[in-house]
Image 1: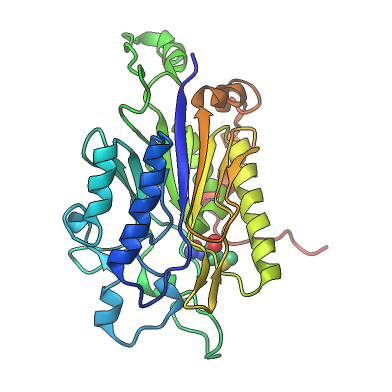
Image 2 (image 1 turned 180 degrees about the horizontal axis):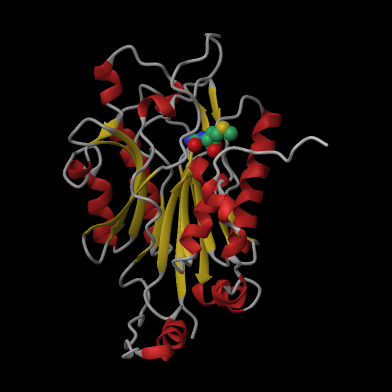
Length: 342
Ligand code: CDT
């Protein structure tokens, strides 16, 4: 039985440091309007969707820095974010949105959430684990900083896969009474028959195969990744875009799952370049759709989650082929330890 979903990446072009929050919000909603007109069911927005990519800057003013953060509980009520969720609920479109999160105790996380339109609420949250960059700014005042390690704490939620309800017409399955040794087999028969299993990651996380595999081991069928990737000139933009795509294609293939990436891109403040290259990739690692501009653009594809099963039942049937007894180094060791010199 096909399990077909229409999904989209909402790529967002330049957002300047002094951008008016309502204007940015209006652009995000316009992308949702386009999605609704194309009957899209799930839209992914980029990392730190609502503002410019502020970790590039060293802020001397705490009050200015605070304007880039949201409190999780306010997302669905604050005038600068809530209208996007209200529109999504009205259209019946699920959305995944990245934002800078400030918790009650003042901790900052680079976060994204999944809003289920049918539930009218946020049903999952992910906090970026792999924070790139530095705590201190570069001494060269012309250098572009990446101060994520200064403004954010590494995510503490792990990689929680989750099911998104009511996206597929008849995704409920009757759970069999599993018992004894037949339990595993019956469970396997049920795999790929329920509501879609999703996972989220943010930008630099995509370069770490551990992230993809952690989700794949939970049966994830579709991974969502929003990003802001800096590049300093046209040549680097092309190279970084190609690398980003290779990373997404190879990891989708090695984990037999679909992935969507959504870029914040363009020339922020007419000076800072961010790559585009938003893409939707299938479980064989092939590109189904990709952006063609460096601006606001909706990238749409219809995907059949059933296509994840081919890899999962053959080459990447983890249950039959993974050899965890050989992988201890991956979790026991952090840095590189080379063999002794001859
Ligand atoms: N935002 C973010 O995570 N950017 C990183 C920069 C890493 S430097 C190679 C990225 O992966 O694009």
